Length: 228
Image (cartoon, rainbow, N blue to C red; front, top):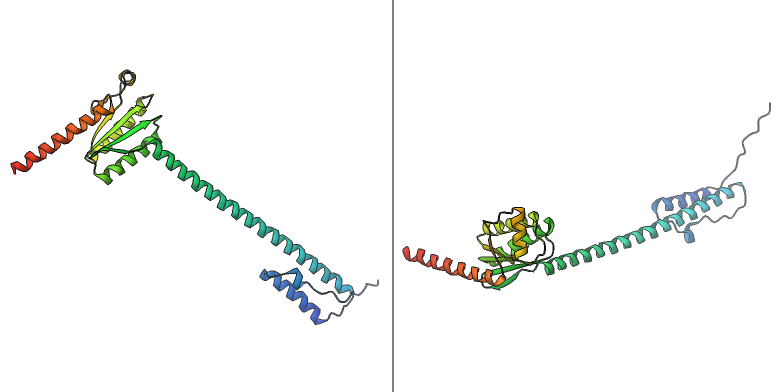
């Protein structure tokens, strides 16, 4: 039985080196179809292989270019998203500061007017800002005014108690003002114990209370100094 003999093709070494060079440029990521494609000069059996290498190189280059463009677009979208998130965070902080301003009502007297709903997160933020402001200015009195709070439940009342206790730990005398008859009745009905918290009806009454505290505190210090 006759078996066909494999066809032997003689290839110029220079043609093999051209293929090697193209593959090397591809592996290095430096392939440019305008410069590095194989110049097919001979139309023989091997030229079809050279054409295949060229086709492969073009398609791979196009895929790489497309991937790089996609990465650039993704990177641009990521930066845009980061900028938007940064803007949103700045706006959130600005809104928080506007919704919970801490005002130096008098020398040594700060006031925290609260408006709206007080949940756990907002309570923590308000307490943190109040304590930070107290530690910065060494305020001896703080007034938490809840005139703008329409609804007070057990959770809200507990937030205020914790806020007052935290201020006391820094040595600041703290009162709660703006207790309306409706809120007073609600607190009584739900059984909230505010006996350890000084509560007053208006901000004016709270300021008078702070003046009285400061005057008495100064008098006690004078007496202590004289006794020595």
